[in-house]
Image (cartoon, rainbow, N blue to C red; front, side, top):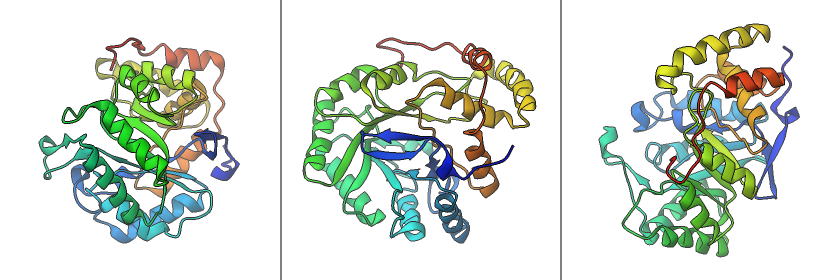
Length: 302
């Protein structure tokens, strides 16, 4: 399969005014073990990020909790001043107290969210961030509406261009939309696990972009993982592709709202991910893969 540059691949609009390639880059893996501390191969991380934009990727996703903080700093070192058309998205609301994942928590205090956004701007070297997510709907230390309202204030003040939501329920998504426009949402969704299906539907209906977590994972289906692998294998063989490429191609066929952000630490793997956007699955293949997992839709699905 002849690979075209990412700049030649299909695009998607975020918030009606930011057009980016339909395969972005999730930078989370460019941290230490368990997403704690700096990426061990610092120079390699800088080189990979520069290769990401050289390959034509125009959407990069990060968060202040990745490291914490080290991921945003690495992106700035590698890419600032940012190439025209490159969109950086970050998130705030999660906190980490140490290496162990048990220290992961969430804070919704509006003053803390404001501080998180302002410090992300400083670390990334930006005056305004194009897409800023509330990273968690789990926080109970402040009303959810107040959390979204603080991001709206940051938007009104010019520090945030568009607002996104991560780790929220469909009900919270609708609450947020009653306060401000929501340009993007993230949730767990891939060929083997459709946990975020109701948010995908909500995003489609409201014109938001949907960025699935673990977009090319083949193990999220639990007991269904073996069936997922068996179904992907012959399709991948027909296209001389990897199963992960087919899983990514399926996402792009599944919805026009889809903006996957697969992460990698390998340039070869990055190029494989971009090549997946060129695969044209048949309707029958899309239907076969779609049938691999249930898609819960309802107020309690998430």
